[in-house]
Image (tube, rainbow, N blue to C red; front, side, top):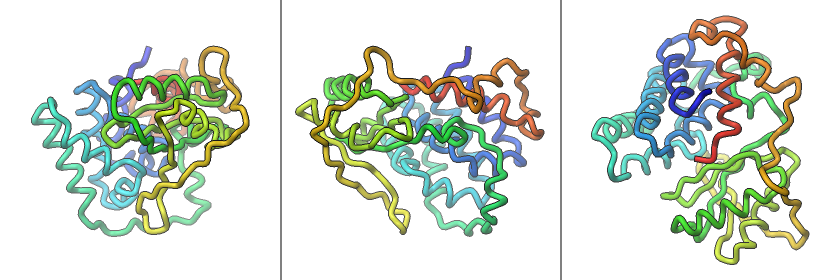
Length: 271
C-alpha cells in the first residue's frame, strides 16, 4: 500500500532523470501535488519533495512554470520560516526558493496541439470530473477552527479531498467539476466563525482573492464520507496492478506508476 513518502520518493527518482523533468512539470497535476507535499508534517516527505523540486528546477524552462504554480512560493516561504525543522530541510528550501525567485529565460512556446499530447500523470489532469480550488479562510487561526472547517467541508456532497496550509490560512479543496465553489463558502460560513475567499492568479501572475457569496440555498450534504469519484474507465485505479518501474516513465506505459500515485493523492489529502 502506498503512502505519502513512497509516492514522493518515486516521483523524486523520476525527476532525477533529466529526460523526465519537462513532462513532469508540464503535467497539470504534478506541481499541485508537490505544493501540497510542502505542507506535510513528516520531515522525510518534506526533504524528498524539496529534492524533487530541485531536480525539476535544473531544467531552466521549468522555472517560470514552477514559480507561477499557485501556492508554490508561499509554501516555500512558510517552510523556510517553520520552526523545528532540520538545517538540511531549511537550507534546501531556501535554495529552491532562490532559484525560482531569480529571473529565468522564458520557456519556448509549444503549439497547443503538441501540449495536449503530453502524458497526463495525475488524476486531476486526466479526469475532467474533478477540479482543485484554493481558498483563503479568514478566522483559520487554531486547530479548533481547522476542525470546524474540516467538519464543514466533509459534509459537502462533491468534496473529494482537501489539505490545509495553516500558516497562510489556506485550504486546497479538490471537488467535482459540477460543484459550485460558492457551496464551499456557504458551508464554511455556516460555522459562524469562518469565511472563505477563492485564491486565483491574475493576468500578471499575481495571486488575488475573489470574494465568494455564501448562498441561501441548502447545500447538498454527504450522509457519511465524502463523495469520492466513481471508478470509471478513465480512472487510474485500473493501472495499479501493473508492474512499477522507473524506466516505465520513458515508454508509452509511463502512466502505470504515476497513475497509481494519482489514486493515492486523490484519496489521501486528509493530512
